Length: 450
Image (tube, rainbow, N blue to C red; front, side):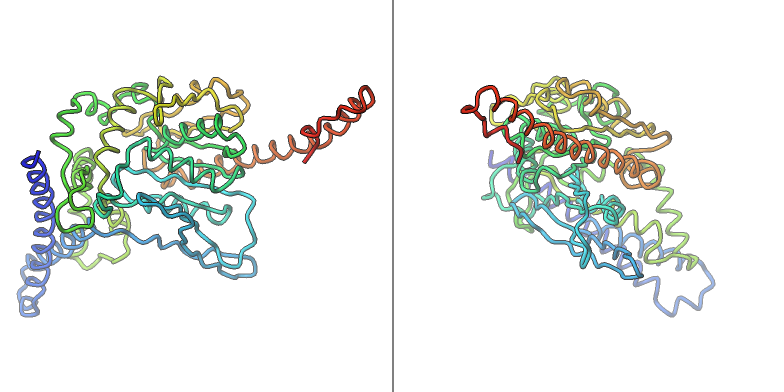
């Protein structure tokens, strides 16, 4: 066991060493090829080397930097801009509940919780999603922490712990919250809603929107699901799990490294990424490059990766992808069954992209057939033509087509809830009065309107 642990630390530190070496090589090439004397030579090779160095240094440096939210100010009436402040409102060891407070703005009727994925990237991957919702909503987000920075003394964190975090966050925000789960957390968010439906119905969210999530991975196989099925759990643990090195606060914690996850992300679309970086290097060499161009804006976020705890990664593969516990409605938390059929009042909408190669069409909409206790009037689904995985929550498809549909879905069920409350308020007194005429002493005060 000691040998395996030391081997894991060595492997982790070896990856960090390779990353650091590439960053240093990029910096060295940039500095050397930018030496003023070389400007006297007409050979374009020096400009290319300098450009390669700048792009390489920046790319490998981003891999260990947590991006800032950088949410722009919200335009208000009369030309006044409202500054957005990012404020944690509930802090826990493995993740915080963050509020985007818009200064000097009246309370918004729509209250939204964006459940960000824990799949190798930071919650800031949903920056454009948050920014697009802020003009019309009061927005919260789950901001997960990098496992390499969490001390071993904080304990474990698997998919059951993740689900309990979501239950606590939703309960904290109150029953008027509308939850939007992006990709990986969709099945666990569905489980959290089922737990609240059974244990604390008054704390259930108003609506639940599931975007591109693997509710039933077998409904439409992809390269991701094929990989999970090909590998045994023993092979995954042996090949993927490493132990955080001595450089970080979580030294000794077993993790699935973000760098390993990034390598698999890039391998899935290697030609596209290679072409993007070649184009960027030539652009820099010609002097056309910009600090805030499209390439940098995308890859500054895409390359910033975080480690997941080993138990979270392995339990996700074992229970969500291999065991299909959500798809079969056999998921348990602390040994207690979580019955998705208990969800009867939460309106649920699924969103899928027709060209999604990570969570293919069919995987997410499978949630609706599992909600046996939910009437069809509270179910909705949308398949976005031509959209890939990223596009359905942060790209053009989200901004132009999906976002308006989600806001309409929220508004529709917000109005339904208000109408049902008014109907109860109108009908209950007459019911009580009629009962009072029949048997005056027996008035059930619990049925009186609040």
